[in-house]
Amino acid sequence: MKNKLFVFLASGLLALTIAGCTGPAGPIGTTGPAGPSGPIGNANVQQYTFGSRTIAAGGFASYTDMALTQTQLDNSTVLVYHAHPSNPNNWYSTPGFGSDATYTVRAVLLSFLGNLQVNLVPRTADGSAALASSITFSRVRVIIIPNSSNVNLATTSGINLKDYNAVLKYFNLPQ
Image (tube, rainbow, N blue to C red; front, side, top):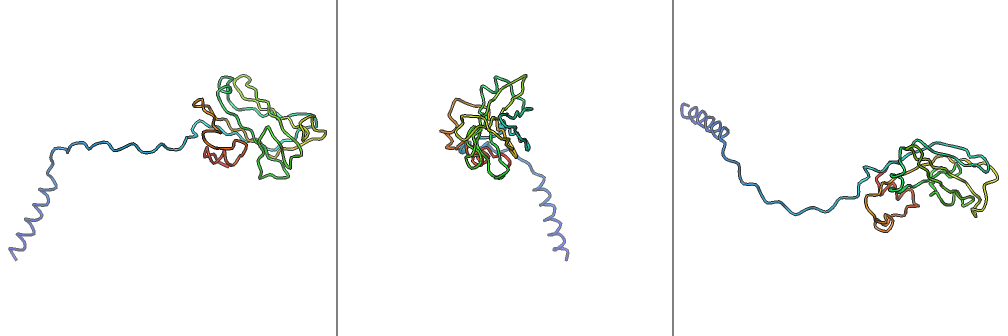
């Protein structure tokens, strides 16, 4: 019994001694190869959503409250999309044809006192005249992408900028 107690105490003392030992740090290992580049980020991409608005015949709608100076506007890509109540889940690139190609929409971008103003102007399907009746957009989205280099985003990324869902996916933006 004494031998078992001695072995038990000796092994405990040995364990404490080993745990308390410290030595010099080993040498720093070599740096491994660099990993692949990650996807393009969207930290500076801004998305604005505006609710339903009816535009009177021959008129236009202004969307404001987007902080953007003229210099920023000159160095950014601004994408505008609208949804029509007849197809509220479809987003139409602006400028371009609207729902069922029954009208077109032009976009005029202005920077005024440090704010971006987007004016949407509905026109006939051939673009020749203002609409004769009012039109309602159920939602409007404006996406501002600051240019980080002088490259053609559509060419280098393969993204179709007229495809709203492709733009959201590429920049990892919320729906």
